[in-house]
Length: 469
Ligand code: FAD
Image 1: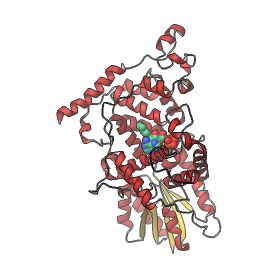
Image 2 (image 1 turned 90 degrees about the horizontal axis):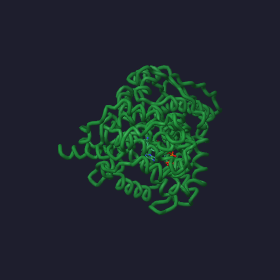
Image 3 (image 1 turned 60 degrees about the vertical axis):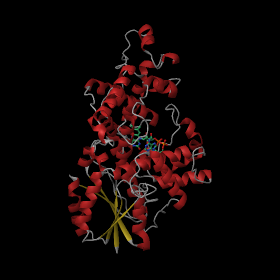
Image 4 (image 1 turned 45 degrees about the vertical axis):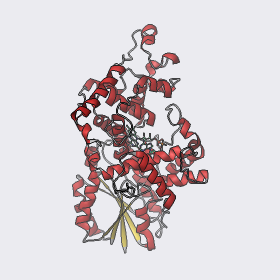
């Protein structure tokens, strides 16, 4: 008897349901990972995340090798070849069953369906829920539908947690002596992710440190980009190096209980994990979200601008709005951006420049180390007013007052905009007159839009939708 575990976005040995179940009863296990560079590129994923993935596959290979489990990385030119690839590989390496954790993107679900069809006569296929605390589709309204707004989903999620708790799967026992880890280097464009330590232990250390200190102040500090007030776990969660249940276990261990309601210490952070699950459940329930379509169908007819120069100014951080520019330059330099800044720059792109959220979503994906479809699409559509959001469409962030509120001293701005280093704090969010008077010849751009007018235009775009219905 031999089982095959197919690793995908679940690059961990701890709390990995597919791996754990495959090794139950002491059955011998091998592991594979299938890499398709073309699909990576079609999904517009970033070179820094590819580097992070490559390093994590190497780390996973080492961890599995210590358990006596060999990991083979197979490559294919086109994802549609996956069933054939598996059939051929299994002919040379016979196995009795295939184990995997479910992936949620539509392309991946279609691929898995094709694999199921092609392989079902050859071996047993078992699929598990490894990316959410509660399986997609398991939390529904009374009529069996997926929730369309966050708050009732979160209520049901918490009720489920109270009722059943969460499950953690232990690291499987070693199967005999260790094997040699394979050396793995993915092809394709890569940008160094060396600033991020690699491996499950590194991710768990980060989680533990955050729970020991950060989780207490998270509610007060999470909105200030100059402060290291959030967990920075997203790159690890995106590749499945750590699981959401491990996050719950870490908070529970730290606090002695799970915070279940607003006002309890640690709840604000737990709530963010619920947002993560909300967007993942939505992606499964609404396939159109994987197809570049708006969550709110009526917003498909919004007339987005085609302003190329505006888009380039936004991408490169030259809009003349310091908080927006600092955020974009931080993203371009590091592959990561603070959540408050993601909201500000997304609102700016869609509501000030009137450019489509799809352009922003793609650009983020091409740069982020934590890029993942559900959260990225969810965040962009939330900001654009086309998504699963209870807030009114006329909520438009003012980029200047957002900067004043969340980077009051300008520390974050000065970190990323060398041309504003000398600007006094009281002028840092509107530095143009000061620069003209004190640094003639400076090259910091004037604001590329008038926010007040841009806001009214954005509201008018949405008002026009009401007239059509
Ligand atoms: P923490 O604040 O410590 O939160 C813990 C974890 O909860 C995060 O690691 C993340 O997995 C999850 N989480 C937190 N906030 C959200 C949220 N609003 N939605 C969904 N999950 C959340 N997150 C991604 O992981 N990948 C993306 O591609 C992505 N794109 C985004 C695009 C936009 C326009 C916006 C507004 C948000 C996006 N987010 C994305 C959500 C959020 O900004 C990041 O998860 C967060 O900044 C990561 O930092 P952290 O790990 O320190 O988070």
